[in-house]
Image (tube, rainbow, N blue to C red):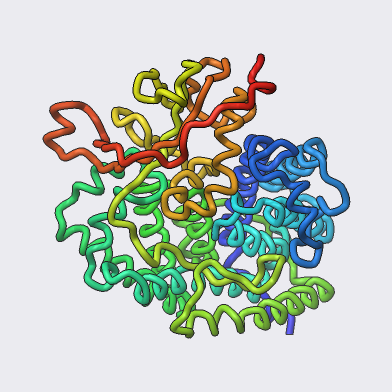
Amino acid sequence: MLDLLAAPDYALARWVVQHLVALVYVIAFTVALAQFRPLLGERGLTPIPRFLARTTFRRHPSLFHLRYSDTVFRVVAATGLVLAVAALAGATDVLPLGAGIALWALLWVLYLSIVNVGQVWYGFGWESLLLEAGFLVTFLGPADVTPPAPILWLLVWLLFRVEFGAGLIKLRGDRCWRDLTCLEYHHETQPLPSPTSWWFHHLPRPLHRVEVLANHVTQLVVPFLLFAPQPVATGAAVVVIVTQGWLVGSGNFAWLNLLTITLAFAAIDDPHLRWLLPLPLPEPAPLPPWFAAVVLAVTVLMVALSFWPVANMLSPGQKMNAGITPVHLGNSYGAFGSVTRERDEVVLEGTDDPDGGDSPDTAVWREYEFRSKPGDPYRRPPQTAPYHRRLDWLMWFAPLAPRMARTWLPTLLDRLLEADRPTLRLLRHDPFDGDRPAWVRARLYRYRFTTRAERRETGAWWHRELIGDYLPARTLPRSSAAP
């Protein structure tokens, strides 16, 4: 029985998957430490204490139900970062089996606690993907124990849901996916373009159609081959890795692509992977009976939780990036079922003119520059992924979902009026060098990539035209405006 659970030819695959998941945990906890205070802290745009007051542990399980303060959050995130670095350095391979499982489990609990109070700032599919992958990696075992085959299959099944779910949501969604024209727009209108997106956008239209067609094949056909015998499964995994690499090269999607590549390695056996990574690993021992029992229990749990994502994928009303458990297991995945044709950007401006709100046309307004989102037309889009700029992502959603943005964007403007230092650290450039502006406002612009001729003539990456005010000019009450 234990032999049926063993996958001795996947020791290298396990090593790669564990280390890459640990790397993503390092990035995720680093992002949490760097950004939580202005977004979610006690004076954040959507404060965690206010959120905890209107929810329950059952709905959003989190350690922060026991107690919240910014210091407690910092300790939780810093502990997660230290443990993730330890896992990346190979600590779980030298610890006893039970201790290694405990380390991975604690990482999962700590990040789950953050995600479940993260509200709109953590409402991305790759958060659930990290939690589900992190949960499964907990039961892969160390290098001196034979890899458990059911957990590897569950990782491949997770990859299948990511790819096939994304393929279905596209096929059922925007017509441009069916007529192969979506990538004539997507490179320009995606949330955070990368340094190469301008060139991808200007590829010939036939190549854009090839891109879409290749995407359909990779997401709707190749996932089934991941379950085929070797070497077919390895070939399918390589196709996924190459396709995800193409996405890494053309856009910024946080750690989504890195995690998807990570899952693909679970389908590559050692004889093929050794060509790329000739690591000397110890001879693994058989699975201890108690560990085999745990693996079987986890497998039964995940198979049971798979009923809903399967039903969702088969449903014509397929939901994107949705789940049924508050612990983010057994999720459905998918992205970009629809593609925007035009890019509208909210630009924040301030003035030190005391009469700026009453006479906006005569005041001198200066622009706040974000780290990743388009702003200055002459600035080339930066490389951000796998790091996640949460505020920049939400600014992309602001024109698409103004009701959602109005829950936090007015508060962001107030923080700029206060010259709040944690908030200003989220930005690339403060035009007032730490001083308080008298007024701030949000304006809406229509952006498009410059043509090749415009780029040669002006050096600009973007062309933009003013649409109008997104939020009117605002100032602090007189009682709080004094320095």
